[in-house]
Amino acid sequence: KLIKKTASIEGNTNLDALICGEDKNGKEQYIFIEAKFLSDISKDTTYNTARDQIIRNIDAAIAKVDDVDDFWFFLLTPGIFKTEAFGGSEASAIEEFKPERSRLYCYKMEEYLNWQNLRDTLPHRDNITEEGWKTIANHIGWATFEDFNKVANKYMAVPTEEAAMLNDFF
Image (cartoon, rainbow, N blue to C red):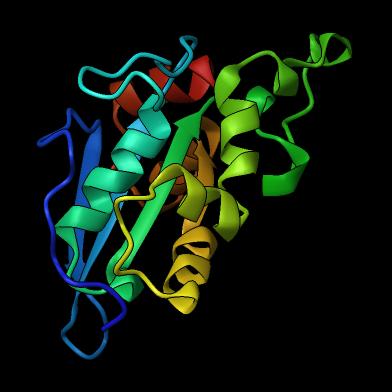
């Protein structure tokens, strides 16, 4: 194991979604999701004002898992905000206004792709190895509401009126 289970310095967090499951070997896996529709991440946290909402959620996620191999963190936003470092933004009529640079989370997500930035932002996690930090950074991703809509439509057994409304929205 690359880390041991320890408490976050801020305690529990209000995560938007947590998906729990097992890998093919029966080992528990956790996907922590922070969703932002048109709002930005909070730059203010209750106990440590030097942290932002993303790093706070990543810290709480690290506290939950026994092994960083079991950790995954995804930001969920509209596709127009997704940066090139995560695969690029969706084509849009407002593309010329650089929406992928209009939110604080655009910058913070790219910053946290670098394992040294993660380590430096979470100095109290001194029990994590360099390899552990690299794993954490590699397990940070960005999903879009449009992606979720495509997957839901593809795997939905019986189309519903709600699904059609959701499809129209996206």
